[in-house]
Amino acid sequence: DTEVTQTPKHLVMGMTNKKSLKCEQHMGHRAMYWYKQKAKKPPELMFVYSYEKLSINESVPSRFSPECPNSSLLNLHLHALQPEDSALYLCASSHIGDSNQPQHFGDGTRLSIL
Amino acid sequence: QKEVEQNSGPLSVPEGAIASLNCTYSDRGSQSFFWYRQYSGKSPELIMFIYSNGDKEDGRFTAQLNKASQYVSLLIRDSQPSDSATYLCAVNSEAGGTSYGKLTFGQGTILTVHP
Image (cartoon, rainbow over all chains, first blue to last red; front, top):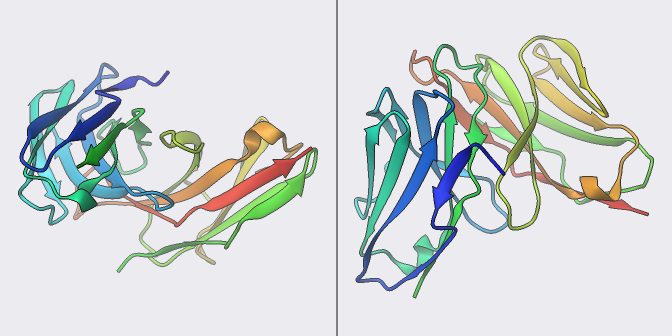
């Protein structure tokens, strides 16, 4: 079990649906991240939040909308996704202080778009 | 474009042998280096990190860093079948002067330890 909890573990949705992925950590980390990982590929950074503010958006399509309601929670709102968006979505968190802080990953949400 | 390259796999070693995983990176400003292990269908798990030149040991794992050569490696001693996984090298560079960094991953090396 990891200290970063992601729900749901699996999600199947149609292209017209709206759903949300959730991530929670209680390690006191003030940086939180969303990654996308396709099969047999490394994780790709999507968004970074620091102190609950969006700091990095890696040119992610607007059908992905992140939200950080407080220091422990990170959401990813999904709308009008495409089949190519099917992937493992990983949340990670780390301390802020210097770039040496390791990132800790949750178990991920496996998303399938029909 | 910051790049991280890992030795092409898959790598197959017998049980009890030393597995050697290598990684090079292009950004000389990189500050810290991480090795993640990822079992099939699971999320990456942090197993080692290193910031300073030299060796860092943790149990059966040794990370080696040479910043002059822009090279980082992971040695796994007494390899076990349970070590069979994909090993991801990740390099952390400060993102525009911020204090949290950005991870750039290599493509991963698949390690198989056979009995």
